[in-house]
Length: 113
Image (cartoon, rainbow, N blue to C red):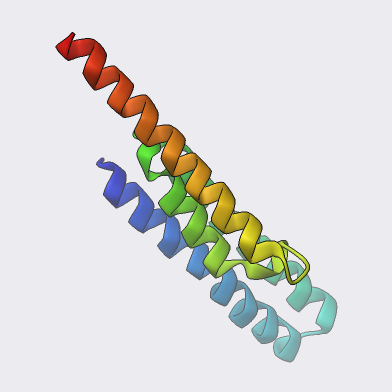
């Protein structure tokens, strides 16, 4: 499976984890009680989040890393607290992209030279 398909499936599983857990949790709460809904919602989230992590972990080309990290951050913004989190993510993504570009260009010059 190509890296693009892995990323696509990873994001789909992540969205299902978020929205599916909410739907299953509310359904369980309405159908039985709050505890049942919470457990079903957490179980659904854990299952699909694990599938998403598995898809992201199987990516072979690390040049996709900034795109995956940026996408996950866009979907899960509550993980990073505080108003200054955006600048740190921006700086980190730029640093990772620059490092990967430098590493790739270094390999190309070694091959040519």
